[in-house]
Amino acid sequence: MKQTILVTGASSGFGLLVATKLHESGYKVIGTSRNPEKYLGKLPFKMVALDLDSEHSINTFSERLFQEIPKLDILINNAGFLVSGIAEEIPIELGKQQFETNFWGTIKVTNAILPHFRKEKAGKIITVSSIVGLVAFPNAAYYAASKHALEGYFKALRYELNEFNISVAMIEPSAFKTSIMDNSSSPINKITDYNALRGKIEKFTIELIKSAEDPIIVANKVLNVVQAAKPKFRNVVGKGTNVLINLQHFAYGILERNVLNKLNKTKE
Ligand SMILES: NC(=O)c1ccc[n+]([C@@H]2O[C@H](COP(=O)([O-])OP(=O)(O)OC[C@H]3O[C@@H](n4cnc5c(N)ncnc54)[C@H](OP(=O)(O)O)[C@@H]3O)[C@@H](O)[C@H]2O)c1
Image (cartoon, rainbow, N blue to C red; front, side):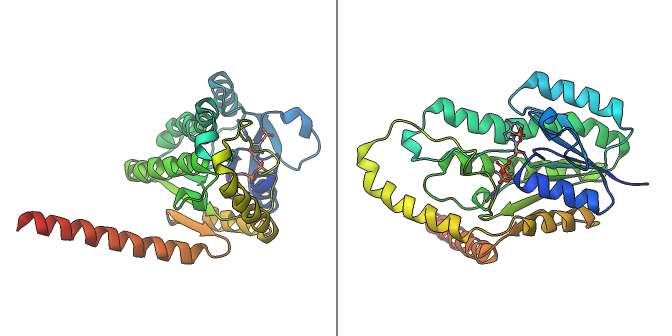
């Protein structure tokens, strides 16, 4: 029987490519959008309503989902957005909004699906994090924090779900050409002290957008994880990401040695 896969945020970018690829590969796909009516009859898979910022929407969505399908095999948490700007300039309310969507929305959807997976003693949860869930760059502090939070949460959850035969995997892309920048939110009020840094960041961002890769690479990576019997937890994808991970392990090595050295000194 065809496996059924739910892809959140399937109207654009990675989600649209992932959902289309999975449909073409023979899976039954259900995609989500805040405005599914816009895509009626335009996509090869079914779109349903889901707004990560609304508890009511998440509850209605999960109730209806299991009325329509007898079984869900895989959840792909992909929906999310970017708050960009100098950290101090970002109003706390906008920072909270970043967490409401990227972190809490993703957790609430996962919690809505988990009872079904536990009952079935089977399931796979794939979450689109980001390379900035592992490292961080300026101008995206809240975004990086929301993705770091997801990494920490799912790393812990993975151990708890082991006994239910539910696997957990993260996808950590670097920069890819989607609509993420167009759909991003930024602070209106600027602090002039940051103007010099802002100039450098703007240049860096222009370069980053120019060098961004084809998002089909990410869709292929997700397909690999979908098809893996035992997926790895961490799945970085994109130019230079393996180097970053190696460097991070190296950095942790230094950190650990520093802590051990300090402990040894305390002992003396
Ligand atoms: N592009 C990159 O370089 C990059 C790199 C690393 C990670 N990512 C991550 O990849 C994921 C997809 O982003 P993308 O680059 O494909 O961006 P995108 O083209 O802007 O797509 C974002 C998707 O998320 C949905 N969405 C946004 N806010 C939502 C909300 N409050 N409730 C429900 N759905 C919401 C949108 O659906 P509707 O507007 O139809 O509701 C849309 O389908 C995100 O988690 C992003 O953080 C992107």
